[in-house]
Each structure stands twice: as C-alpha cells, then as structure tokens.
Length: 327
Picture 1 (cartoon, rainbow, N blue to C red):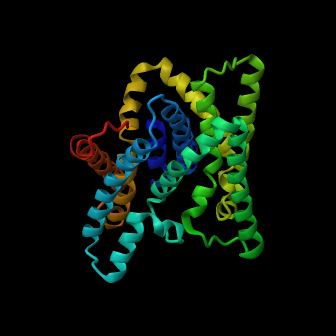
Picture 2 (cartoon, helix red, strand yellow):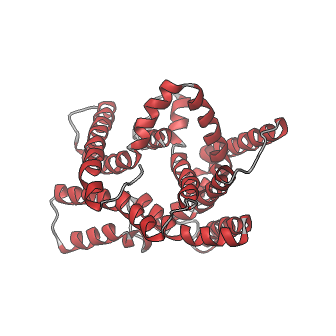
Picture 3 (cartoon, rainbow, N blue to C red):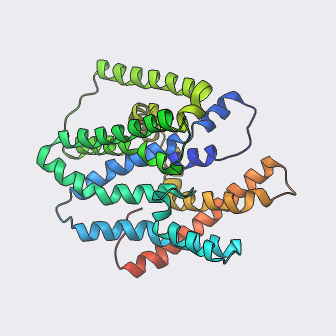
C-alpha cells in the first residue's frame, strides 16, 4: 500500500525529470491503483472469512473507514474555493454521495466512488464464491472484461474513440484485478498449497515481462488512443500480482525499508485524499515558485495534511463510531 500510494503521487507530478527511466516509471504510476484494488480484494477475503463476521459490521466499518474522512476533505475544499453558487452546492452533493461519478462528472476522487462500489458488491461475490467455488471469481472477472470490451468497442466504433464516460472507465478497467486479488486471498487464507516451482516462477515472470513490453508499447505509441477506450490498463492485470509478490519478497528481506513504507501504507487513504485535492487547489496558484519547487511544496503539504487527517480519524472519527477500524 505504501509503495502504491507513493507511485500514484509520483504519477501525478506535472513536471518531467528529464531522466528517461524515472519519467517512464512516473508515467505508468497509475498502476498503483491496480495494486490498491488487488490488495483490497485480497484483504476482504480474509475479513469476510472470520468466524465472527457480521455483514452489518462489514458495511459499517467500510463506510466509517472512508466516508467521514472523504467528507471532511471535500468540505474543506468546498469552503476554500469560495464558490457558494447553487451549481457548486449541487456538485458538492454529487461528489459527497458519489453519484456525480456515475452520471459522468469528472471527479478527481473517482477512486472513492470505485472502491465503495466494489466494497458494496463484494459480499455478493463472497456468498457466490462459497457456494460455487472459484468459478464465481471467473464469472466476476469475465464480467469486468466484458464491460471493458463493450465500452471500448462503443468508444471506437460509435464515438470515434472519444471518451464520453468521464472517469468511469477507470472503474471498468479495474474490476478484473480486484477479483483476481480475491482469488489470491482465497489461495492464501484457505491454505491452498501452491508450490512456487521453477517452472511456475519462470512462467509468471515471463508473462509479467511480456505484459511489461506491451505496457511500454502502449505507453509509447498508443496510450492516448487506448486510454479513451479503457484498454490501456489491461497489461496491469498480469503485472500487478507478480509485482506484489516481488514487492512482498523485497520488503520481507529489507525490514528497515519495510517499516518506512508501512507508515505510508497506514496513511494511504489520507495521502490519496489530501494529495489529489491539494494539487487541485494549490499547484496552479504557486506562481512565485518554479515548477520543481511547486511539486516539492505541494508534496510536503500533502504529507503534513495527510498526517493531521490520519490523527483526526484515529482520535476522533473512529472513536465516535465505537468500532475498531483497520487501516
């Protein structure tokens, strides 16, 4: 989670570094979202497999882990923008309820709408999984692929490859990886013995390597054409599980680095919320600084604001709900 949020923040930087490797890594930083969703699907399987699991507590914990902080941030942003027109209030309601995202408004906080939707349908998936086994996972993954392809074909054939759905394509493109994470959660939680044989390791790394080559080709030659129809995100469906396993091995080996990234992981939601809105509010208004300094300043403000929000959530919001919320 810590690696993913830092990668996303790097992706949002607007100034190239003039270092080809760093700039490419930055340009594909949207893959951090795929890591988030993979790990979310993975972790929810563990959560719902507990003996004392209650559906009411599940929805309550998910709601209070995300929504209060989200409302606090969008409320502060609304006041800071000093626009109290009827349309501004309407957009605030659309944003607060996440309905605006689903009816086509461009929304920097699209991930909140996406993850709340996936959290909402996960119990349905889990119930079907327990009844029908891993076949249920493939049905949900297949449904995600179908949405991607239908949307892509509609954009290409009917709208001349123009995206009229706004940020909603970012959800369509990530449904498969979320439920792939759930499959990995099942393998880990239910004690499935998967021996990482030499052949399996070679196959996994080869598939990830080929997907990475495709990602490079997409990014270099076809990104804007494929991004508008949601197909630019396909390589991460293969890359993400392998990357997460490699990161797990790396962090397990280097404990000091693991502890540092764990701190960022615990505040990943707060960093995401503060980061996207601080960039929206401040970046274009820091005229007295060069672009590099502006990036550094907004990053520092994001980290400070995220820490404050994390403390507020831990000391005030969580306590008010009278439940223990996992980060």
